[in-house]
Image (cartoon, rainbow, N blue to C red; front, side, top):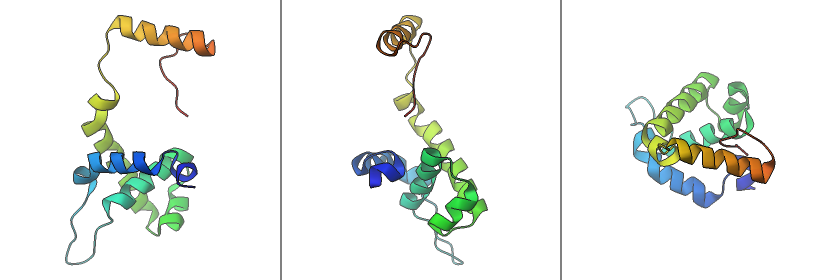
Length: 117
């Protein structure tokens, strides 16, 4: 069920959370408790996995649509800032050509450098 819901295993979610937690956790205030890092990541992954509207997410996660929108934007920015080098290493021209050749030979799809499931 977890994998169908977030498009990743619980272990992968936990690994991603451990890499991002200090960057996406907000502090509690005297007025309200912050939304935990786990939930912030879950909201973002659910949005990315399904393309649900922020109105849908407000009912799923019991937060306002504008809050869900801000969370998704913030977490995506943090993923890019802190994991970009891990996820998107700088490749030279030959490495890009090798990747494209691999996609063409395995999927008969020329000039492709990646795919998202």
